[in-house]
Length: 157
Length: 114
Image (cartoon, rainbow over all chains, first blue to last red; front, side, top):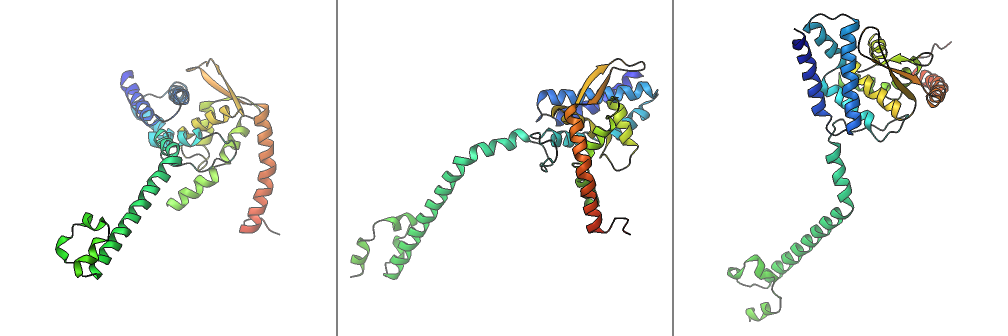
């Protein structure tokens, strides 16, 4: 009998634990212990008899999703009075990573992109130039147009 | 529906914690006791389980302290009490809240205007 009740509780706490992976370990353990104590206190002090009553306790606590979201919001960088709204969902460890890389990665990617644009513009320029000077279209593979422009006029005669 | 929920969340943010502080102002209370009290006040906490992360933060910032004590009728209880810093924060909130409330009442038209 009793194991049946604790199964519900154990499952609830396990589901919550899974959602707290991004929290500091001590905060995670503290929350799980607080909730386990709460449930046990309710059971003892209210003389709860059956699984249904225990499920009611869990429902009042809120779903693991709701409790985990609150845990991440409260875990933020500890501004005591008015916390800035933190992102509702939690992958903190993942979210941290890009901001570390950002200072140098973004400029490099940006520079590469600009260089690519310049290359394309040059290619387009050469291509347009070679068209306007009436070169036969047959010779055109795009790479070929990057070749120096000098030989082209001699073609036309 | 989502607007209503969003409003409740926004109003709660920044005020709920002072309700917690006030609850332990005169005597220490254990977690379940605090949570039950919030359960009796509809709309104040999102759900009972969200009180515990809040208690944890208030303890980490030094506004609450906690100690475990045996219980006559169940598992050991974790009693929360107000620290000096918590008491100061609560007093500060009381001052701010009154003037904030008066301003909002005046602007929104919810005061008992005479």
